[in-house]
Length: 358
Image (cartoon, rainbow, N blue to C red; front, side, top):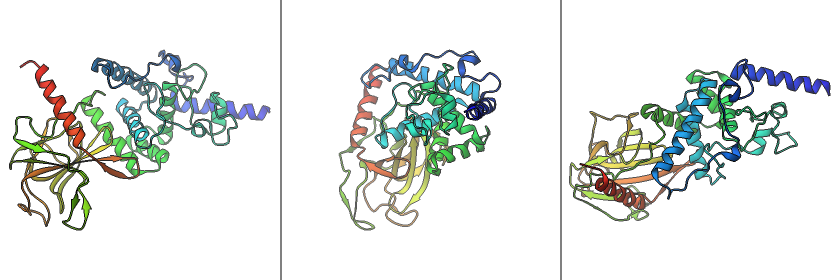
């Protein structure tokens, strides 16, 4: 028994020294105070005012900065991991944790596979059994329901290979065992770093509201060119040269020619949704290229009728924008109907234009 306690204490001391330096024991010992998880405010429902969401973003970002100050991991990397977990919780229908942080651990991940106590909160025994749980709040417990404990535990896990960007990438790959997951997190991190805020969820319509356009729900209709397939998007008909805009904050993941979609652009947003713009006449090369970070309303190209053939093929159908949405669950992507979202974003932009002073 004495050997067991000695081993536990040695492991705990070594881990503390590596992760947080001599002032181990959580963020409170580094000059930070944090309330227990039971007092953490729940995320507001969508029906609450935007000011409420801004307060949530502010509190969440404060947590990222606190853990960043201790671990050296940039706040936007921590934000990216948290947001990726939020999207995966939704895609996989996992039970999202209450509170500000969406990072999800099973009880076996948290306490260790061989740990007989699946609700273990003892940081030392958790380490002994190889669990990921750590005490980030300084209350002496590694509580899986505590926002700061979960965030600090993920940060500690990311630091196993080092604190350089490539080391963090390796640490993330070791955790997710999936290159796609690492790429998404890095994309999210770039977006957060670029805008220096979490409040990046406004959308707009994909064309200027003043343009002459028309559309209806066409998702799921049959298509024949290139073999039988369903229509995975909404066609928005407009004249040649009507500007096509980013509907979201995101990063241009793909840009170029596709035999089906012609000149097309793919934008990945912070909800891990891929926005597909096809049949463009040309790109806005002065402002965007593959890898560029974009915001709602930014022009990325212009309406055309390209596609259904080799590069440069055009005119096989009336000019229009094919717009598609695809959700990622970490392993695969699938399309879903963009029509309700287009209507919603169109309506919201009209409302904003009425309330915004000239």
